[in-house]
Length: 107
Image 1 (spheres, helix red, strand yellow):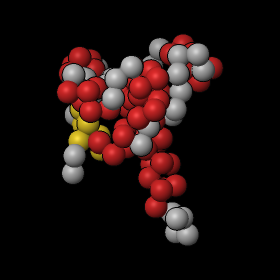
Image 2: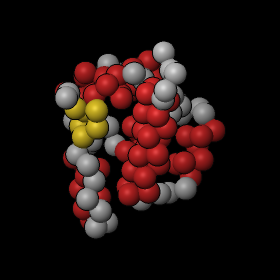
Image 3: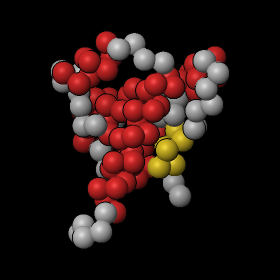
Image 4: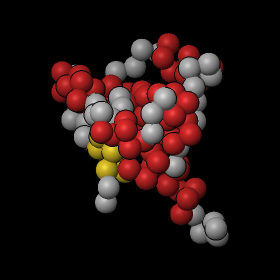
């Protein structure tokens, strides 16, 4: 399975907070939201991966299809969540996306 990296600086902050973060997520997860990745970062998903990936916050915004002008971005940013808190939100978002993609009866 092809993977997409989480930024090393983000992983370091996780360790500082005594939280062991996954180092990668599924490449396909991020690729499905390439338009948002381009809008938010001006780079393809492939280029972002080559440059080290995204933080949990950046990944959350990409897979939520949210940009810096969206209220959701402002709300999440304003919560000043730890890396672990951001990871938890990403995890729930990933579970919902997986469920939607593979639910019985979905085409």
